[in-house]
Image (tube, rainbow, N blue to C red; front, side, top):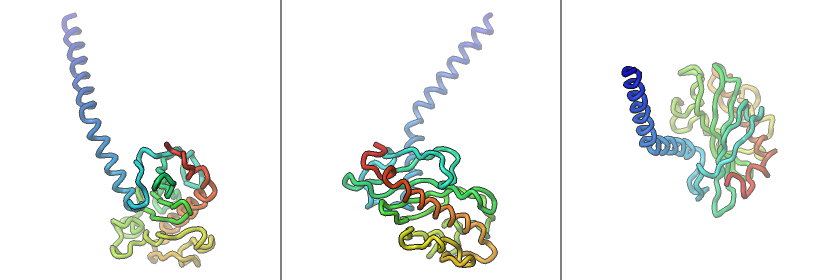
Length: 207
């Protein structure tokens, strides 16, 4: 009986200590996570385009094949002087050479691409991983920057391909499966935004 009581006391004290440590460190962990997320978002969304609390101004996107998503995801609505200016959201290229390629995309309210970044992939090091600017050997003009400033209005649907397939996008010889997947995913994501623009950029959305 005595042993059981001692064990119970030990469990209660230990659990309380763990809970206290969690509560004490939680704000710092959340702040670090928010900082890391904003660091990534800043690569595709210029700071001058918004003056709202971006991480709080969010909306849930349901699963949709156009985004390559089989689960709900979070999008962030950028506003300037109260007007929706851009949307930052995630898309997935399911047909990469080595599996899914996860993307972060920023699009203005008029459908112009501000930027695209790869957030996760398993493409072959030194061959297909040039889609990630951190791995791209061309630091001055990374491959992923080809999307900057493009839109459905300025680039015809038939051009959303690598040059090898009579499109407009460069690729590395022998590593075209990876860029094909990314280009296709970005193109589909732009159509998704165009088809859902009213809901996505609603003035009251996400607040």
